[in-house]
Length: 131
Image 1: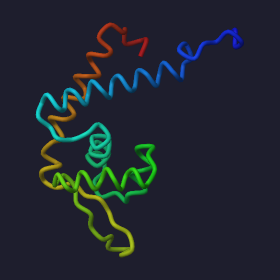
Image 2 (image 1 turned 30 degrees about the horizontal axis):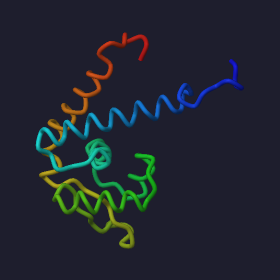
Image 3 (image 1 turned 90 degrees about the horizontal axis):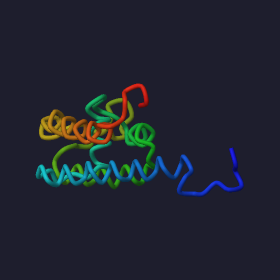
Image 4 (image 1 turned 90 degrees about the vertical axis):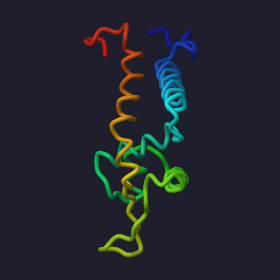
């Protein structure tokens, strides 16, 4: 590989970053079009909670590759939308766990379907063995 003549726009990291941003934009547009008042970042936490409800904020941060401050801000937004609630941990009352509300649980099928639809659009012309 010719590292001296490597251009940023042709680097793997740059291409992956652009692809991820484009997919996030597509998901966000789909969410908005479907009338959902949630962000892609909030969806990431919801997906994580659908897999395992009742996580500490640090667990959510680790599982979504975000810092704890970002997770706090995202959880605040989800709480305002009544999709999650914070509850004191029974074993360690200094800690709070994040739980889905009924409203948050009820969004699971629709948001997953929407996200997978965008993924299918993006992979439409890509052969499965190339994934």
